[in-house]
Image (cartoon, rainbow over all chains, first blue to last red; front, top):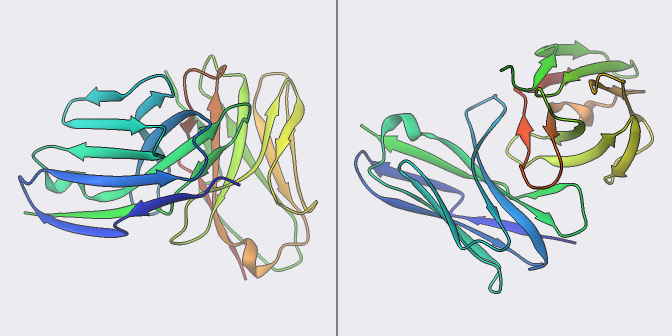
Length: 112
Length: 112
């Protein structure tokens, strides 16, 4: 069974700081990996999708990398803003499967 | 372009009752998945529907059942509700395997 771990569980940073969120997974036979943002009590907003053949994806201030062989992904957020405060979840899809395995998320607080 | 729409947004039910949650997928998507998210946890896969059939199921009891209609919308039914069924229920839609999943805002179910 795929296990997805996210470290740290919570992170608090001052506005303007660059930060890295980590995601690790146990089964490297993945099809893709997706990073989501979740505001309290709300649904999931997709941030970035990385296919297994890709090494990274970028969208604005966000950059996600994937190292399939080591079972790791990172989400880099540049110049953090208070509006970035949310829980960030990573999810992996195994090759041949139709479901996502989620981590428990990193709760980010950006202090003005 | 409407995203994934879920109804209702909130629901309070009594233990032992039955509940039906509804989901309309994003335009152009033909596959619907349902997830359960307990407080402080990552979403857990319940099942996925494609071409009106259950294509894959997670580790949930038979009390959880679903349906997909010809217009690709879907329902999640939960019978004999338990207090432990209290959670945020998320619907996700997709098209093929390349595009990733789009999630709705969820239905918050409280069982009392």
